Amino acid sequence: MNKKNLKILLMLFCISIVLLSTGCSKNTKDKAKQSKSIKIICEDTVLPMVSDLAHDYNLNNDTTVTVESTQRENAFDALSSSNVDLLIGYVIKDNKDMKSEMLAYDGIGIIVNNSNKVSDIGNQELKKIYTGSILNWETLNGESKTIIPVAFKDISNSVEQEFETKIKDTPIKEQMSKDTQYVSSVEEMKNFVTQNKNAIGFIPGQWYNKESKFLKLGGVEITTSNLNNQLYSLRFPIKIVYTEEKQDKLKDIFQYFKSEDGKKIIRKYCIEAF
Image (cartoon, rainbow, N blue to C red; front, side, top):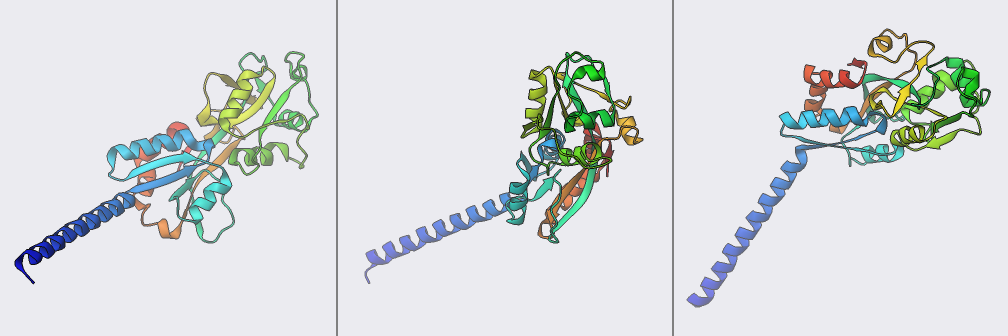
């Protein structure tokens, strides 16, 4: 082999080594980047709190936390297939491969349009509205207008489930009124009540704003103090759900949730931080 051919072969060899090392370096960086990211899927009922927690965590840690909201079945499928690291807020499935822990409690506020003159409602009156026994606001000392009850389509929604257990199905289980309107999200619930003067609905306390108003429930306001003392009867648990294989990866963010910084944000939205 002449010197010219030898030089060409040597050059090609060197180029191959450079390309190979570049590829390895890129793969290493990609893997490092993936290991320093945590994907959280949460129920929309807890989206304000979870988004704030992620933002605060990202400010002080190398790991990047991303948050999105999706329907329950999609969320658990994503967790089972390892496409997501952590679920927050969902009613957990019966699955021995999934672990769950309490994160907090939030209250469920009964909302009506700002123009509604009613300010207080009893648990049984609320049940009668949703089962069709009370049809007009006049019965509750309001205007002579037909009540439009609004509920969530997804009965596995943690807020819907708690509402049905403590209101609609107490003391005995009954069917929803045929006049009930259904929405798919908390945002839709808020918008529906805002746009319909005679509507009534229910949302997590952390979603409250001045577009609608909370009713007292049995004369009790939805406040942190009343929820903590269990004077206000409607509250729902917020859980974190994960698989055992993700436990080590999530160790730092779990510590953050239990830290004073994490609890401070949780308490801003909820009544109890675990």
